[in-house]
Amino acid sequence: MDPPQSLVSQKPSDSGIHVQVHPLVLLTISDQITRFAARQRKVEGSTIIGVLLGQQNGRQITIDHAFECDVPRGDDTEVLLPEPWFEERVKQFKDVHKAPSVDLVGWWSIMPPTGPSTVHLPLHRQLLQTHNENAVFLGFQTTQVNSDSRTAKLPLAIYESVLEGENAADAPKDMQIDGEERNMSLRFRELPYAVDTGEAEIIGVDTIAKGSGTASHDEMRTQKSNLSTGNEENASVGLSQDEEELVGSLNTRINAVRTFQDRISNIKDYLISIERGDVPPSHHILRSINSLMSQLSILAPDEGGSFASEVLAQQNDVELAALLGRMGENIKEIREMGRRSATIQSARQTEQARAHMGPGNTSGDLTGELFRQDMPRGRG
Image 1 (cartoon, rainbow, N blue to C red):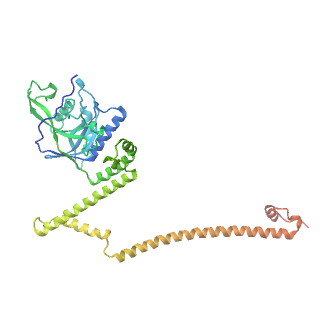
Image 2 (cartoon, helix red, strand yellow):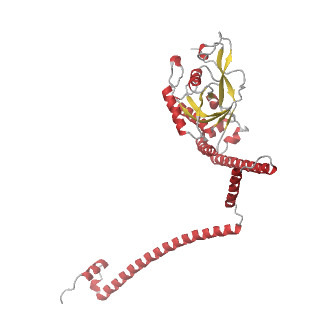
């Protein structure tokens, strides 16, 4: 069997398409590859595929969700999706995510460092012909994850498919789509992409990062012993778990403050533009700004004296409730002490009465004396 041939085009993309990937998609892909590696113990050379769902508005593609797919093979070990199951699965995702609506925008799989090859062509051709003629391909390079290099670039690339002319005699048969001219073959061109993170996703990713920091702490400590001293990586590896969590928390707060500052700047620029007459005023936006300004008094009240008095009143109420609780406990202990004191005093009086009755009765105990007091007196 011939080795897979790379289908990456030598020409850059000229379509102007830009892709935005959400962190949930990256987490889904990472989770699927991690679970596959835990079961099979080998990722390179295996077949792991999934589908990408999102929106396409003109030349802007947003990838919001992803799910894994089964990998049944067709003739000649071609990887194809079962149409009934696949259509039902996509329909379920569309029913769940209705606002905003999602559609199939592409698929993903692992790929070698050379890029997409003839192994990925059958499935990509299936999606182009039956679901989306503009479907993109997201390739994940596992070799970059296992390497020792530490780069800021994610180990993935996104491609669009185009038809390029070449010599028909040199074009492999499986690289041609049914119905196309024999001198045209399918090629992949890399597209620019960016990671788009929402406010809710920032919180979720931060939580996952804190948990993963705990799991990878032992691995980082092992790597520290293998690194040479004086390397810049030692500074990051040498951090303790608490220090890493602190740095992550500070970075999250810094990003939140920067986002808040940017939004305040946008509001300020908008008001200045209205004052200058550059843009027409929007009463809906102005009402929203007024509502926001009215809520600032809750965060920073103007009247410091009244706020301090309210805080003092609440503090006094809390301390008074605690004091009443302690008084109740003290009263309960006093009542218990009084009951025990009465029991001891009664026992002393009984002993004194027995002592006046004579020496013959000194050997009896308190219980017997009580029983004798309850018995009826005999005839004299």
